[in-house]
Length: 415
Image (tube, rainbow, N blue to C red; front, side, top):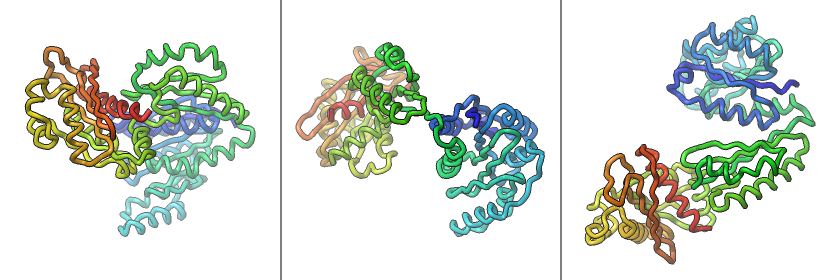
């Protein structure tokens, strides 16, 4: 089949920017991995005429499309109706789709509202795509020369249905000998995008079969390898050679050669060592704890976080000496060390990490500008401190890079 594909997101929230369209990015990556070439992303609001027109246009220029959104039970969910108009057919009740919707409500021990029957009304000729985690069945429909997959806009539902039903069907259509697209992500921290690009300036001449890309997910930089071909073993060997070269070039700035985030990788290191961690946070206000506890399985290593924002809290909760605070100030390595030691003793952890700094926009003092942060790190055998200074005007950016820099300090300790 022709490998041109498109993605369409629907809904006024997406069109207006009230919601960020993360679905299309996720779908595009999955489609590219199957060997399809995604030529275009489109977005249409809850407008029946416009939605119908865009579906018709896609059907005439691409061979495959994935559409997300507009399959709910309310009057502004118009995708099925628009697809029927583009196909020049009618909406009919699909008994198997209705049974699936009813079954979902039965499992939830709730009566099905009459409005949800609308979700089983699909264009004639469709094939139903099962939704194991929600009420909205998806459907596949061929319009002109294009095969459409219509999926719900709820990310969890869309991803589950795409993995279970859509991608396997695409792979069957592609058949043996299809083009293989491999995408490898390497996560880095401590370099800007321009610095990373400078370090890797010889990549293109060395690896002519690989396209190199960069993606900023502040404060991390992802280095992306795009490899295309038909020989699976050759691509794997080429990818491995490129990753080894990148590791040599970027060294300890590489957080994960598997695309894991800094919090994810640091958590993995703690689990592997069967080590526990406690945090004492001031300027990061609990953000460090949030980065780790938002990960599944954090109870294996995470014991507690004390957000000791005031000097009084540092003294009372962490036994920071009033003399230390008076002599060196709250934002100092001396205070950071006592915070780390205090929380380690309180938690009985193997490791502890503290943060104290100036996130801004106010609070700067002579010698301590906005962006200054001091870390204390207590290990089973040592107590160390470090001061860094970042130059971001935005408070939230400073807090986030403070948190990630702290995790990076811990990660490098394990190295």
